Length: 173
Image 1 (tube, one colour):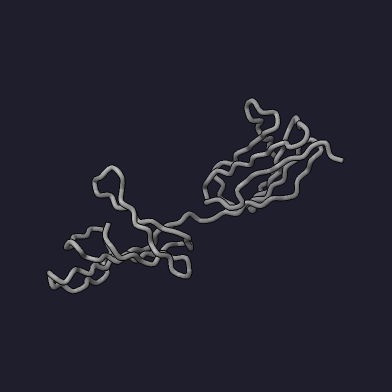
Image 2 (spheres, rainbow, N blue to C red; image 1 turned 60 degrees about the vertical axis):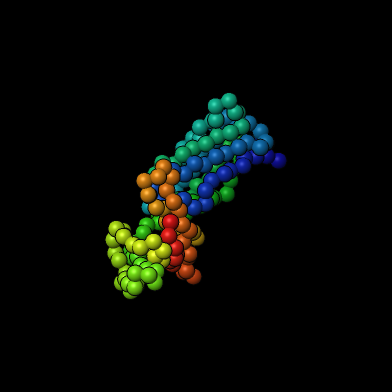
């Protein structure tokens, strides 16, 4: 039977460029050293020693800085050797296109505008504004922030279409 058991915590997916923290907790035994063996998709490989947490003999961590590619790693400490773990990389979300369509109220007797491509809008009170945007990746949620000179910006949640792309939202801030 093993004298050391390790619990490994890590993010399975991270945004490209984020730091990746691998945390290790000794749930049985007290290894004097914990090593992380890694291999990046590009072929770069090696090992690093996880740093002991101050004041804790049973906790260790290592931070891979600004990770830009997927990698695999395993952990070794005492007589414990883990299976391989995989960290996937996701692209950061980016708004690639946005347009606004204004649907004014009835009283000024103005037609609905063609989509506008800039964010400078002057409209009558009661105008419905349709925001349509496209992003580089599928999203689960999106929020549009309005900076109106107030300390806290106003927020409107956006509807997401079936492909995970922001759809549009009617209303005013």
